[in-house]
Amino acid sequence: MAKKIVTIGLCEGVENILSQKGYSVEHVEQKKILDILKKEEVEAVIVDVDDTVKSNVVISGIRHLYPGLWIAVISSSQDEKLISQMLKAGASNYVVKPVTEQNLIPGEEYQRFEEASILDAKSQLSPTTLDESKKIFPTRFYNAFFITEYGRLETLRAERYNKTFSVILTHIEGFHNLKRKLEKKELLDFLKGLIQTMMEVLRNCDVIGMVEDKKIVAVLPETDYFGSCISVRKLKKAIEQITTKGGPYASIIFSNVSYPRDGKGYGELLVAAENRVREQQDGVWVKSGLEDKTFWEIVSLLLEGKAEGVDTDMASFDMGEGFDFSISFLDRLQEMILQEILRDPRKKGFLYLGVRKISPNLPLLKAIETVGTTATKIFVVGEGEEGRLGIQNAIPLYLADPRLLETFFIFLLREDFSYAAVCRESWGGQYSCFHTVDQYLIEGLVSKFQADYSLQEQL
Image (cartoon, rainbow, N blue to C red; front, side, top):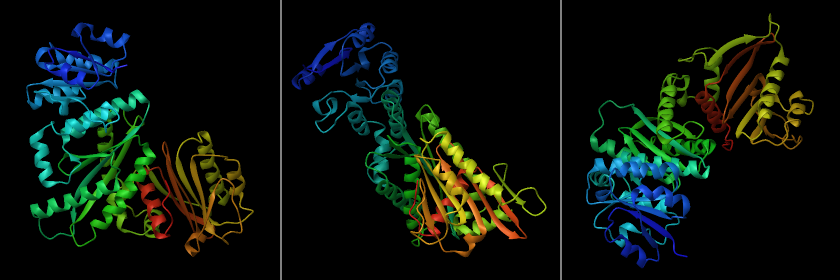
């Protein structure tokens, strides 16, 4: 049975092209289109904007009821305002007349109309801007107009097929260690290197573009929040290498969000990503310049209360001598974190528990045995003899470092909740401590911990 495509408006030459390719074409009056779509299985809709009254209303009505349906718009106009209006209404593709076999029908290599429409649109949306971008940046890098429309289409796909997708915002803060202003060519060379690196790290299906000056967006289809965290980790590592090879050292902030966790549409996701950039700018990690310090240097600054930008999301305190708290309080705190994981074991995440010394009689091990199967990976860190002790539901990390013998810590990073606490014995049974729910600080601490001890990155 031939796949059916309906047309609205004159659509001159469309039926001849489609019928030769084996499609069944039916012309439909615009007022009857929704009835046809409701009763019959239709592969696509083609709308002749030049011969359709209030075509944007027609398109938005179809798109609202049928989010995944491919809708092509044809017109003799190349006006960017009209193109934008049609795409915002819900069109998948905009084809400038005269229609041809090449610009109207997806090729055999395309599996879905949605994918083909995005690729076809690339050559027609905002041609002036795209041409200029291609002169400066590598291929597969798009302008703000295209990336916005792609994000909108990705939202519709995710909504219809109950999928998730993520957005990574890369914000270039500025350049350091420079005694002069960067020349235009130097800046462009840096941007090209940055973009090229991002494209090498991210997948071929991920779409990357510039939304405005010094802000690059990547849309990651069918990627959940933790998947985007992994991508950010890879980007940070790769970009750290290109910024330390004698060129300008750039301060870059990454912000990742996902649908529907952080927003119901691309616009909301971009706003959420912008807000997280500002949160990081105002946070402890950036203001205190912790990126350039080692794990234990950072811990010392936090324990001594010398970090800048500290707010209600973080606090330093003492416990032990002269207080009702004891070392059992730390055991209880670790058990409470495990109980938090048990509330919803399906939530992805990881937990590092620093216990000073791993031994069979450790109270924490009995609590871990009750956890069972969970999507949160648990690591127990401390001194001990590797291979002597198997821990059920957790992975032991045996590290020989005297600093670990005087330090307890908890690092929890999950989809819905983050928490960190560090307590170091000072004297007479007294402990200096800090704890925080600052997600960016926790991510930074874990990254430094993994790097300083050459641990495999875990997310």
